[in-house]
Amino acid sequence: MVRYWKTLNEGWDAVFGSRFARGGGVIDYPLLKLRMNRLANTFIRMLFGISLNDTTNAFKAYRRTVIEGCQPLLSAHFNLTVELPLKAIVRGYSWTVIPITWRNRRTGEAKLKIQEMGSRYLFICLYLWLEKHLSRGDYRKDTK
Image (cartoon, rainbow, N blue to C red; front, side, top):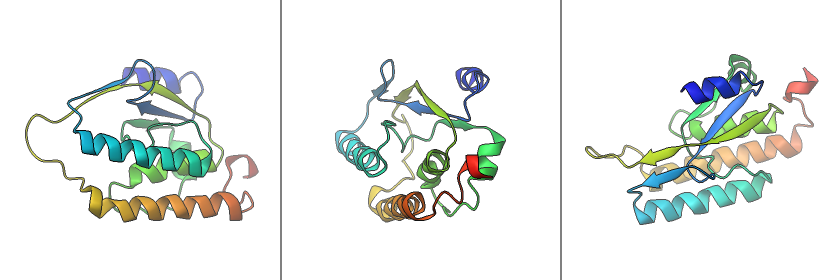
């Protein structure tokens, strides 16, 4: 959290953690889940033409102005972790990436079900792709 705070204080509007940036890593990542993650993130990168390689990662920090500027939020589930960073990017907020390390849980079960969330992720991605290409910048930070 301290690294996120320091990075925000450098002037960035948002800071995104990446398990796949240089210096980041994963420990005990299930192979199927890893492959699905990499496919989903590659799809998002190609769809939006962005360099962020871990959009689905939940470890992010935002200035209050970004959260306010990303309203209205549509996601009622874990797909919020994709909606917020993509809205911040599409709407013109500055962002950067810091490496993080992720470790698979040692006890309990993951609540994220890939099959269940896939359509929610896809909906958010397509919605924001449409916003990016059809809104004529109506929601962009620099036009307010």
